[in-house]
Image (cartoon, rainbow, N blue to C red; front, top):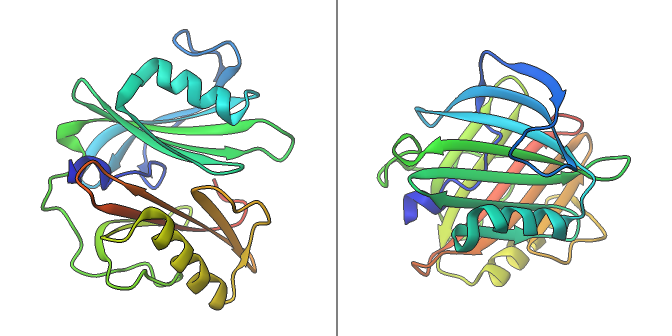
Length: 222
């Protein structure tokens, strides 16, 4: 379970053999268009990365994913974005949903065989994301940095409740000079500093451990 929930973010992969196109996938809703599709390598495992554009609401996107994954879906929504994952029939699928400037959302999805998604012992021995504060007494469980788009993702584990962890970390991030989004009222919070953007999230797993997501990237990079 720890290895399944430790990899909650998907688009921090090294992209190879990319194909960019617009078409409607047969297995997806009429309102979704596939914008990007490529094989990837992440955490020494293989998978497939896709992005979709949708005019659906965030709630409609969640409903569609629950229709596909049922109770396997772990979903963490904010006011304007969300992230999630599902482990179904030996396949791990991770999602990140973010708003488009002109309305609607883009949906990033990473699909991997569970055996390719890392092992329980595959954890960093120290925090490596230096651009954002670390939650006190948390332990790193996943780190990824994409040299191409400078997107960095780190996930940590702690014993605090998700709300307490997110509130404490948000205060630390603000104290470090980051400006919060005015709609930071949900379980996923966004901050901006200069030409950089950061996202924070927290979710408790069935094992009782809270996982904290910290994501950092330059503005305008997808």
